[in-house]
Amino acid sequence: MSQAAVFLDRDGTLNVDYGYVGEISRFQFIEGVIEACLQLQQLDYLLVLVTNQSGIARGYFSEAQFHTLNDWMTQVLAQHGVRLAATYYCPHHPEGTGVYRQHCHCRKPQPGLLLTAQQQLTVDLARSYLVGDTLADLQAATAAGIGTKVLVRSGHRITPQAVAEANWVLDTLAALPDRIRSG
Image 1 (cartoon, one colour):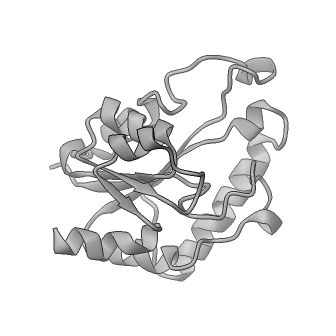
Image 2: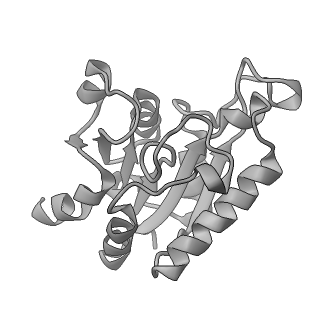
C-alpha cells in the first residue's frame, strides 16, 4: 500500500540558504521547521528530503562533507522526534568538474529524485506534497505528478513563474501543517 509523502527541499526550505551550505557550522534551521516536520509526521506523511547539491560538482564541498552534514541534520531532527524516511540528492551540475559535470535526470527540475523515492518508498505521488523555494523544485514536482506544490518564501526570491507553478505559496514550511489541516 502506498503512502503520501511531503517532499522537502533543503536549502531555503529547511535551513537558511547562505549559498552552498556544506558545513555544519553554516547550517541553521529556519524557525519553526522542526516543529512543522513533527506535525507533518503526526499527520501520517512520510518526510523525504530531495535536494540539489551542485556545491559538490563545483568543488565547494565533497560528497563526504555532504553526508556528514546530512547525518548531523538527521540526528538533530531525530532528537526532536522527526524521522526522515530518506534523503535523495543530486551532486551534478553542467558547469561542475570531473564525474559530476553532467546533465542528469536527478537534478531538479528533472523528476529523477522524486521518481526514485516513489519507487523505493512506495509513495502515492498524487496525494503527496513538495515544498520548495524555487521554480525548479516545483517543475520537478509537476513532472513527477506530485499532487500539491508548495512554494515557500523562506529561500530564494520567488518569481512570478514559480508562483504560477505553485498550488500554495506560504511564508515558510512552518505554515504547512495548518494549511493541510484547513484543506
